[in-house]
Length: 308
Image (tube, rainbow, N blue to C red; front, side, top):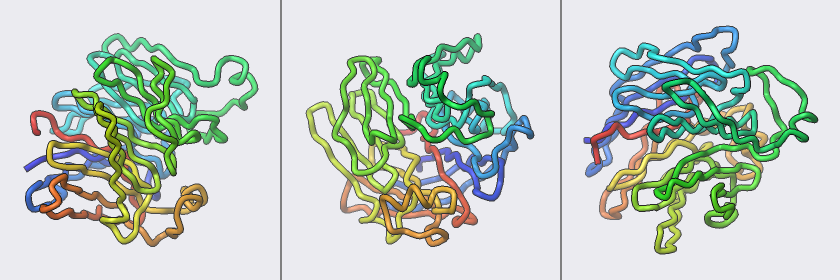
């Protein structure tokens, strides 16, 4: 039995949830073991409908972001153990922790922020530069900063220690260290980006694909349309030795206009759910709807450590 933590929210609420999901990889049976809702610690900065976005795990706690603040939450008591704020945090997406450094896809600010979680110091990789940033209108942390030139959605460090960045507008993954694209230009925006110890690179695309790029040059694609009748906004990805757990979010008014350029799915028709896709074709895939699925959001999925 594998266990995962899922972060997300609800289009009708400003709080975020952490769900503990149990999965039997052989039968494909999934269940929600627990679900905790946590309010934004600064009520005046809470954004309706955002909830929790990026997440990564550290021992028995979760590093998780609202759109404009990062929290460390104990996974037993669900108390806030620490928090990190910055005046430039806006619409935070993926988080990746490597030792004491937390890599942050600061989407609304168009930057990758590198936070030392122990001394709270931070370095920022600015994707706009000073000239463009001077021209961009000023905004508050709870305001939309669109249009985005890049819309940085994913960030991770590969097995070689290189920084990889997912870019929505370009529908590509960029290796920032050697300034090379990874893989093709995708048919839709790239979202989650992750790697493993042997150098394999994984990503999701918003319209419903999971891509794997192996070090031997193999490129494999899983299409959620082969496992679901209706596919929502795809984001949230965890990889085990036996398969893929991927999340999809309900289609609502706030994301329908953009999503409609990639799909004909309609608002209010698609539930937020988790889909288990085993690598062994003789095993059964499965899908688990969240509670109140037609207003729910899934953003990140992490496997609880010490499980393979």
